[in-house]
Image 1 (cartoon, one colour):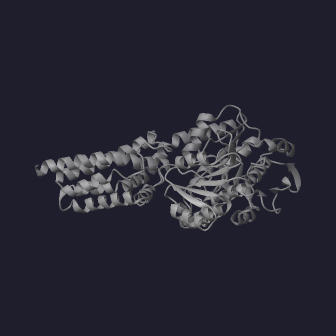
Image 2 (image 1 turned 45 degrees about the horizontal axis):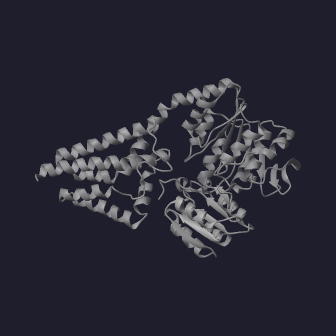
Image 3 (image 1 turned 90 degrees about the vertical axis):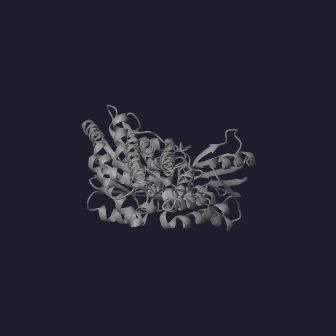
Amino acid sequence: MSADLELSLLMIGVAVATGVAGIRWLRISQREHYEPVVTLFAIRWWRSSLLNAALALLGLAGAIGVWFDQWYGWAAVLSQVGPVGLGVRGRTSKLAWTPRLIRLASVVGVAMAALIAYSWRLAAPGRAVIGLILLPAIVDLIAWVMGPIERVLGRKWVTAARKKVAASGAQVVAITGSYGKTSTKAYIAHLLGGAPKVLASPASFNNRMGLARAINENFADGTKVFVAEMGTYGPGEIADLVEWLPPKVSVITAIGPVHLERFGSEERIVRAKREIVDGAEAVVLNVDYPALAAIATEEASRRRVITCSSGGTNADVTVGEAGVQFQGRPLGRPPESALAGNVACAVAAALAMGATHGEISHRLPGLPVSAHRRAPLKSPDGGFSIIDDTYNANPAGAAAALAMLEGVAGKKVVVTPGMVELGSRQREENRAFAARAAQTADQVIIVGRTNRRALAAGAAGGGASALKVGRRQEAVDWVKSHLGPGDIVLYENDLPDHYP
């Protein structure tokens, strides 16, 4: 076989491997809101098993060896059958060919095509092979470069949403926090009367384009209140949201290590969340968290501050054994399944929006159950009980879910992949959670590899046995075959399949 034919076949192989691998990395980019974290996920996946580690070494060997003999480049091409376990189409987080993804894929494709053509022309395949191996970093780089462009392209939708809210005269309640945002949002919408007068942003539409879409697609005539959940991965994001969606009332539900991996410190988390206060007439703060108690003191001279608490009495709104109280006045009792801290924040926000004590007392017992957040369920056959906490991924919420198991008779099982994005505290937090789970439950089932070592180490110190499974469905099947009437399972968190 001639050298030219060998080179041509190798370049075709690199192009095919780029297409297959690229879809995997693009799916992660989309799932992570186009943040430049694909490289981090790639490292996690290549380290997730001995097979994937071997494939990664094969790829690196090919990328080095191709500079000496182009046949070594095939090792890099063949390595792209991995990471094994990371699907192209996806099971829980499927790839969606949105306009933004198409633009990103097009630029990545053109860049890689140019690199392959350049390498082909120079008869130097090493450049294309290295590009293949570094494809996750290339996706990250292009997504980062395209960020400002995407912002400009989305401006018309944001402008339309801002005009729609302004023209309606609707007042905005803005909610942020390390956790508790979605439940608090649902509680506030209920306490203020619900649709059609009140519109809450759906699901996790909590960034710039998500909120603009929620308004443009769902804002109806007569809407008086828009309850907006606002999330952030870094400084400046919430400040931008409140600039075009100025709140009458701002709520900060909690501060914790969620997204600590991205922020770097809890101090930066506090500063980013605090941006929601700017411009608000009133602010609701959960003073169970010292950082929020400090903000309450600082903001008291600037705007109305309503403090709330689920554990103490030194707050305006408290939720405890005596039910909900506002400055010592009883307002009623929420459902047992309602999350106390979130109820306190919601009641405080409703009061700040002008709801009367009577309206709140009337609506409190009917607070909606937050789906997948400590939701009590029954198995399909009506046998064993289920606590569905699959949308919860923070240490405080996980501890509260475990508390629901304490005192329950029958066999108790905890199914979990652990918690993520906790930065330097991730191993410690997962180990502590598994230790408590092993003391509370009879069986701990560890799903996936992301936190397997930390969870197994924690569970080893408790009284329960630990079972390791690759996928959640394996754990579900085990539960169905081992639990019966009177037994209970806690499903704590559920990572999408772009995590190993």
